[in-house]
Amino acid sequence: MKRYTKADLEKIVYSQYENLNAIHDLLRIMKHQNELLQEVNKKLKDEMTEVKCKMYPKLRRKK
Image: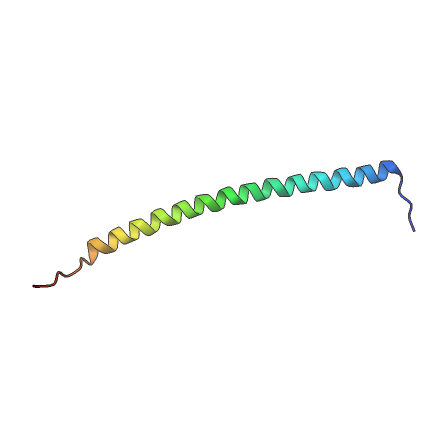
C-alpha cells in the first residue's frame, strides 16, 4: 500500500479542484447554449406557424 505525503495529497486535491472548475465552466457553457437553442426553436416555431397560416388560410364558415 502506497503512503502519500501531505504534498502528494495537496497535489491530488488541487487537481480535483481544477477538474471541478473545468466541469463547472463546461456546464455553464452548455446551459447558455441550451438557452440559445430554446430561443431559436421558439422563433422557428413562430415562423413556421406564420408560414402555415399564409399557405393554408382557415376557411371561414358561412352563417
